[in-house]
Image 1 (cartoon, rainbow, N blue to C red):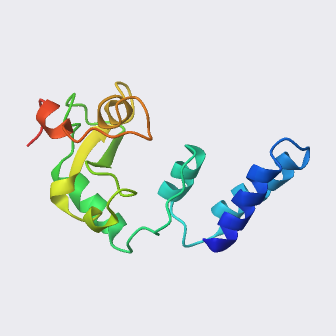
Image 2: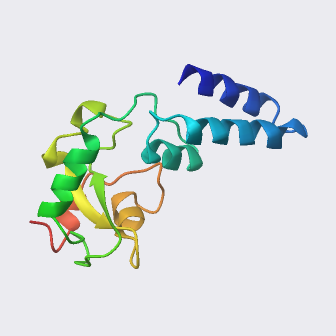
Length: 138
C-alpha cells in the first residue's frame, strides 16, 4: 500500500503536466496487478477514495454466505445485480466489516438502490438509516 501512496502523491503533484497519463497508468496497473488488493479496493480507487486497510481474508466468504441468505434487494425487492452493502462503511469502521448486523443486500442493476439509498447518490456518503427505509428488509 505504501508504494501505491507514493505514486498517488506523485500523481497529485504532477497532475497539470503531460506526465499525468503515464503516472495514472502506472498506478492503475499497480493496483490491478497486485494480488492482495481486492476488486473493492480498485472500485473505491476509481471513485476517488483509497482504503488504507486491506479487506479481511474472510470477507468473500461472509459476503457469499450473506447473499445466500438475503437473495433480494432489501429496498426494492429485485434479485438481480445484488451487492452486500455495509451500513456503516468499511472505511469508517473496519471492525464492523464482518458483522452481519452491519450488512444489507442492495441492488446495483436497474434501480441502483446501492448508490441511491445506501450512499444517498454519492459514494463518499452513507445512509445510517437505510434499514429503516427498506420495504423488503428481513
